Structures are given as C-alpha cells and as structure tokens.
Image (cartoon, rainbow, N blue to C red; front, side, top):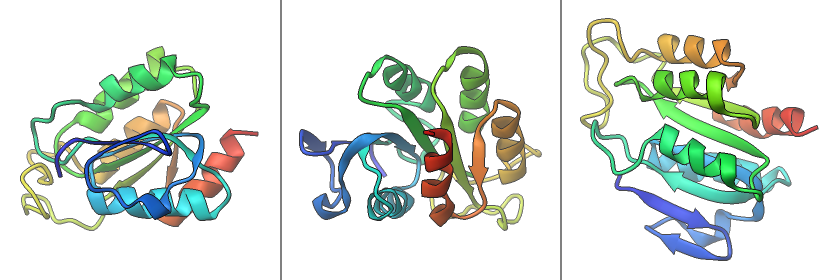
Length: 167
C-alpha cells in the first residue's frame, strides 16, 4: 500500500472508500490498507469519527512513519485520540511506542496483526516478515503496552478502547 491520506469531508489522497468515514476526533495511522478500512468502519459504525486517516504502507521504506504522523496528531486540535494499526515486520511500532512513552500527550489505542505468523515467513508484502526475533507481534504489543497504549486483541475492540480513553 502506498501512502494514503484522508481528512473526512475535507481531503482525500488515495483509494479509501468515502462511505466508511465520519468526521470526528480520532486520528488513524495504519500500515495495512484493508485493516485501515475495517478499523475506520468500526470506528464510524460505533458512533465515533475520524479527524485524519493516514495509510503509511507496509513496505520497509515509506514516505512517512508512525512518529511523523504522531507528531502531526500531537499538534492537531481536532484529534483527541489516536488509533494505531500495526503489523509484523520491522521495528516501526516499537519506535513509535518509545515516542509515545516520552513525547505524546494524547491517548493511543492499537491493534497489531500477524500474531499467528510463523517466524521467517513473508506474509503479504515485503515489510511483513519477522527476522532474528525482531518485528514479532508480541514484541510490538509489549512495547506499546509499556508505553501506556491500550492494545486490542481483535480489530472490532478498537472502538470500545477509544470510548474508554476518551472519557
């Protein structure tokens, strides 16, 4: 997936379907295109909405990373919380967790896909590969939880977690 950007009812770059979006106060950052749609749809049908949705892409080198997006959401008055969708491979989520722990002042919830992926097997695209014990779903979940992020076990749990952190 290439970089995509969606500001509900303002701007759209990419192929995200319009009908799943609702203007709101949740920023979404994702490495997975299909999961972006699923998470956004869940947020919308559960009565919340999105301030900005950023699809980073899942390849090892992207035009923007989680930290770049988090820095923008930190400054954005329209964003009250962030939903971060990650996947196996690389260390971007662990790096984002460190940034969140030390520099981010808004609540973050997350979902990490690939918990059942076998080490060393490529899953879907070049970025989704676990190697040398790094980039596992478990290492990402642990880092995020240690940073105070609420991590969902399933995508459909994201709206409930958002409602809890937005109270």
